[in-house]
Length: 517
Image 1 (cartoon, rainbow, N blue to C red):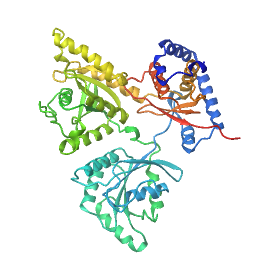
Image 2 (cartoon, rainbow, N blue to C red; image 1 turned 180 degrees about the vertical axis):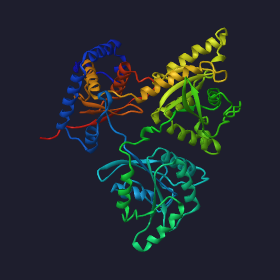
Image 3 (cartoon, rainbow, N blue to C red; image 1 turned 135 degrees about the vertical axis):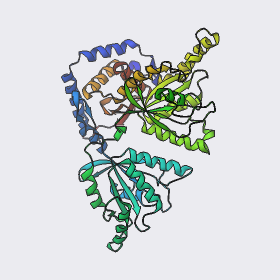
Image 4 (cartoon, helix red, strand yellow; image 1 turned 45 degrees about the vertical axis):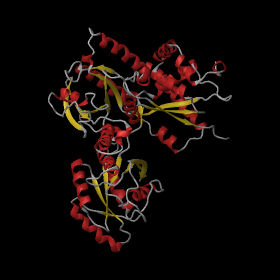
């Protein structure tokens, strides 16, 4: 069989007949759950013959058996480090990690994005998030940096607020204190740059911030950091309450699209009131607007965002800042509803917005708006429908798995169909496959269609597991690199068998060589 496939190209897997998937489904249905788990355990034991690194061991040993026998990795608690620029946040990250990971310079503003690292202290593992400096009324790129720091606070279990003790509390620090109080997270006030005992009285002055006892540390020399970490691990939860955006409350829905496609009208109709300004002028909405709405007997948090313009329009001005806020709103969301105007041709801009959602790993729904303008009795409307279907086949084939809803945000037509689409997408986004079932699926798939030979060698899949959800992420231990076409083939078969409607699927590889005897 392998020899027959030796001339196949990655695209050849797109031509496999559907009957192959039906046969795999029948074989898996007949497979006993206990037998599947035993087979997976044997495959996992076989990995001992291969060179595995620390991350491999963490993945395999960290699997926890949950309800229904499903294995998953527990969400590590998250610690965010925030503060104004140049107070030593990245230096503190490096000290906690015990290695130089974060870039540190004397100039302020080196760190811009939120950067996450895995850390460990006293046998407690957690995720640490380094952020850029927070400043009030920041402009330009500094404003985007501040937004990233605010997102980090929202998506953390514990916050370390770093202050330069030698400078003392500034007005910017007081702004951060108000932000932290509003967030309601446990906060540790870190008085940095206390290099010796003679400077400790400088730290005592920070009691005035009202955040409790300041912890005097020297991130550069390591003084006091161990005592600080001892206190932090005492309040860390066993499993994060916010990792993977499990913030609680109503599910968060971001409404995205290019300007003037009807995003604000959709929010107003869902809310039952004129919640946001609607105008024919494109780009009316600048800031993301949150609103709790009731649809289908459930509460949802809808977030109306600014329209994402072409890159040339994002170089300066209010539209630039609006785009940054839209990206931050998407990062906080769980599912994105991309609104498309059916009266206009699908554009490169529409595809780019959809790709932005895919890169963020959020669940996806396509809402085709202004459907009421395509009258069945109108020849122009009928022609536009035919062209639209052709555009969807050509430009949106890579998201054929995303639910499609035809709506009219202005009249509210078919708005109720948005709810089952949201529920389906979020259910798929949260879906897990038991390790035994997943490996049985892989075995059946490889038996039917093994990977083709490449350079006289045939990569084998040794073991697979679902490492996480939101989005569903699978890790494959292999003996060689899998062609992109073969990975797409695995994704397509996963969708045929388990659904995953409305969510991207991530397949990662870990190529490992057999251990030398």
